[in-house]
Length: 85
Image (tube, rainbow, N blue to C red):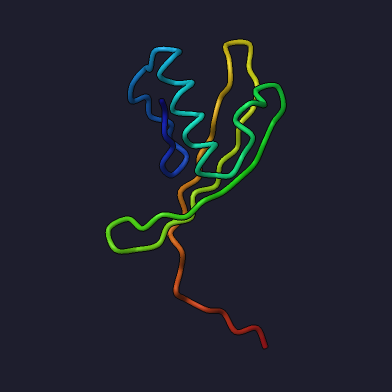
């Protein structure tokens, strides 16, 4: 597992292949994606509440030579509105 903050990539931990596959399947379920399709890229999203704030999580999955990979983008929902005039 890796995460990126302000363009810098950080390695956190390495999961066994079985655990990684189970984690990706769970994320795909939350994002209403087809968990049986490991051979094509897919996109989905879901929302959670974290620390009292709503957060959108955008999910992208795709095949690799080592199995399926997943990319998650964590975005706080903003309460700010923009007026364009």
